[in-house]
Image (tube, rainbow, N blue to C red):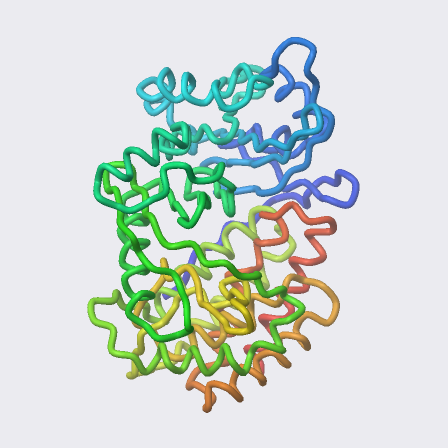
Length: 423
């Protein structure tokens, strides 16, 4: 099963310590979207007269070569932080703008007087600009909180009507958003498939004895693609603590893998290869010099695809960021990717998540992996293959997160994936 990986003709140009990807004829706006100083006046035109952009940082780049790009910015205006999002190429949906713009703009204007144009198309840049909480893919985010809570209560879901102002826990433009208000967490989704997976994941989590307390589904509103779950008071486990909590995490993972959970979709090694090939295409487009190594890795992974008969209930995205310290106990969050998969998938995901292209990453990941296996009780079949494939899927992350020296960090993750597969 050979995967096509595009090869770039030229090395990326440089802008400081963040190289630019080669020009993409389908997304000519990409270089402009990644130019923070140039974007400041673009975003400044969305503000009321006299207001200025005091600081602007690129936080996330969602790029599909030959198709489109969405870039998120952390913007400071008058001492307050905001999130702006610019979209260009095929990721831009003019139909959604025409049908939803008037209502969502009216709602979003009430959220921040400084931003007088929360939705605009910048003709010079050739991109649609939105300011959170306005997101045309998730119109529910622009609803005033009291109105939203009343709507939830009318469906029979118990929520406090005088809940505290909503606090955003996670926002991925055009994909999903997680907010906490009072004793509930609200999770909005951009598409029906992801929403249904979120509901199913919360139902699975509620039926598992993985911690004294964990996420519990209170209800869902399909028409809004919104789930409501009980909030958990705890402290996120830091990446530096991944090895320390790994034995407990491994024990909890074994409970999940041995639990009877019906109705899960199957995640085969072939599905992992498809995901890895997608990451390789992005990497080859932004860092053409790495394209031959990407193609070689994919070929080797395809050649050595493990034939694993046993499939177990799996988290699907098991890593330290999904763990919450609740008064000394651990809670596992976010079962949106729950599936039936080989045991090695979750085990490898935990270790791969600790590799971000920094010096010593792979050694730290190996140490955490050893501690996780101590708690898990056995070394799953096909672990090196799954760890290499998981690392390959992470290769575009330094570019996506707009890290300094992202090209060097990308190459480092590639080297880690090669080293693991050669074990």
